[in-house]
Image (cartoon, rainbow, N blue to C red):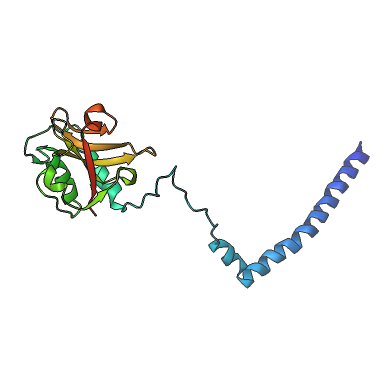
Length: 193
C-alpha cells in the first residue's frame, strides 16, 4: 500500500514538473508581448461586424436619433382626452397634438391638419419611417380633403404602419393603417426634419 502511495506521489510530482516546464515559456512569451506592446493592441482590437441588412425590400431606417425620443414623448399622452382646437396637455385635437409634440423638438407645424400637409417633403407609402406625419380624409371618407393627421410609430415590411394621433372618440391612441376607417381615408404622408 505504501508503495502505491509513493508511486502515485512521484507521478503527481513528475506531472507538476512537466507542466511547469511547459507553462514557463508561455508565461515568458506573454511577458515579452506585454513589453512589446502586443497586449495593448489586443485590448483595442474590435471585430469587423457585418453591415446590417434591411428587412425585405425596406430601406434601412435613417431617421434621426431624436425620433425615438419624440415618439416616447408622444406616448406619454396616450389616453388624454380629445379637445376640439386643443393644443396643450389639457386636451388635443389631431393637429394640436402633432404640433405640440414637434414643437418640443424645435419644429413648428402649422395649426390645422390640412396646413400641416403642405409642410416638409412628400413621402411614398413604401418609404415611410417612424416620425413621418400621415394624413387622412375626414368623416366623409374624402381622399382629396385632409381632415386628420397622426405620426407614424412603426412600419411593417408590407408598407402598413401604426400611428399615434388624437382621435375624436378616444383621445390620444395608437391605430393601425389597416383599420377600415383609416385605410379608406388615407391621403398621404409628409416628412418634417
